[in-house]
Length: 380
Image (tube, rainbow, N blue to C red; front, side):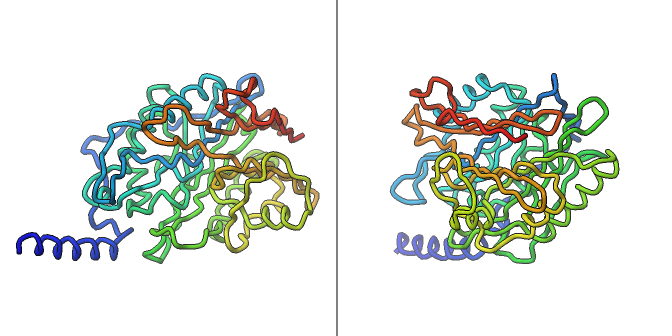
């Protein structure tokens, strides 16, 4: 009888939990009673060059799932293969900034996030690694990060103490952030939108835009586009920088999910493509972002993650403006037991004259150069 009552109670609890996924009922924001002293780091060119390492789609979660979501062995660190890859990539490429473009977390059990902090802990393990390396980094979110119900605001709150993390809620007269509240309890707010300048002396020579692609608190939904509100905010930043610098500031942009326009250009055979076409998996409707970029003529590179096997890239020219759109393949470790997995990242080397070069970094031991297909793409 007692066993039957237990299972009835558990069933009711699970039903209630599913009903409140994304509401934050079971999760309390990490906070501290002590004020956090943290300066906003100023990004600068060195010898006319600035190097960015884009990493994406870790799909990491500090737990090993058993026969069901009720049976999880919680881990006290990241998968060894991921740790090894990140350290080697940092050693090989020596980036000035690391940008992680979503699907960092792939929760295996919402119960362990309602009653524990496995997803939050996973993100702090990543932050610990960069803190130990004294590596400046930032992130935006993908479609999977919030599926266990942990809010993006809580992820970012957990990162506030980290000195090398660059992101909200900190900003000053140069570095800006934007939050869009979504009036839909099944969807997350768009909180990871940043405008980050790169200086050469007193002048902003490049700007980095990072946009939150949005997500649902369930995997059974279509991929969301960048919103009109996000696009309007980007345009306001474009105008602010143009006025302050007296010219259009060359920029690059990062988000998780590829734009529908990228799929249309490739599907219609309208452009030459480079790299491995492993698929695109774009947002399900057009975003106003693409047309606005081509009107503003400032963003020269737009970089995505999301499709794990694709390193597809392409140049688009419209309205007298050239834009490179490129997908970066994943950096996902196979398991805690497998210590070697081929993973990838993207290197972008910016120049003060507005040009850049980019290639996909690979951990494949068969590669003598660590450059996937030995393909280096130049934007001049």
